[in-house]
Image (cartoon, rainbow over all chains, first blue to last red; front, side, top):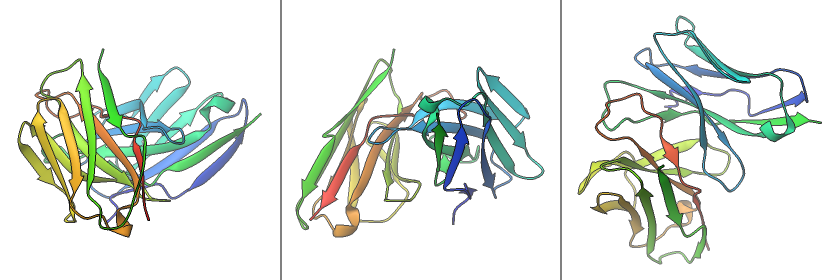
Length: 114
Length: 115
């Protein structure tokens, strides 16, 4: 049962434009969300997070938006750069769990075209 | 600063052989530790996590096991590998004792191929 879903396996964007990666979740108890970036043959790197008490968090070119009523979050990258080409995973945490566990989506492969 | 080491980077093993993957964390004490598997074209599946020495929680029943013999060491093992065990195995840590809402930090993974 996939509680976190990334329905777009891939996305291509021109350099300098905005990249929007989407993520949906089914568990209304999730209260903490993260985005990771992963290059081939490497582990995921933590990018940005958001708590359920917020609807937006910004860090440089990266902004995460959370819509709790729609159970949807998105990652905006502006402007997109070729080095942003990677697989992006969203993840969510249920506070009722132990050990700080996260549920991961299946990833979206972003290609930024120079 | 904290670092996580995972080895080997790649491994090719025959079906039925044993497995031992090791992960160590430096620069922090009593971390939460995790083993994930990423199968081809799929997301990250949590296999095991540990909140302390000797404390292992299993998320997926299978022929793999995990152990935490030391505070910052996490080992993934199997007595007999199956073809379906092929995949990319990732170790991760998060700050222990700090409650929830802490990001996990990943090692560079082990690419395991079963022949």
